[in-house]
Length: 73
Image (cartoon, rainbow, N blue to C red):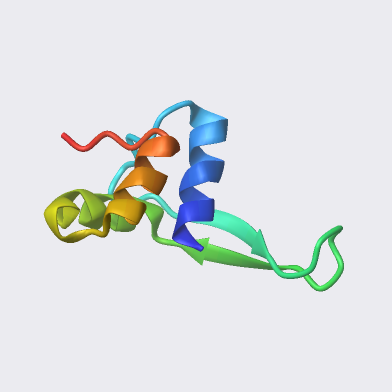
């Protein structure tokens, strides 16, 4: 879910320099608005944690984050 929120933020803002306190609202559930619900995710804290834990993340996670614009430093 956080990866989807990061992708949404990147597409809207053009970067992943997310402020630590930023909350990103995403829609989850069925397509086309039926059965969807909004979720507020603490994206800024999550991004910060991913950077802090970069050496312990799986290569797949690093690749997926890098593909959507993650800055590691």
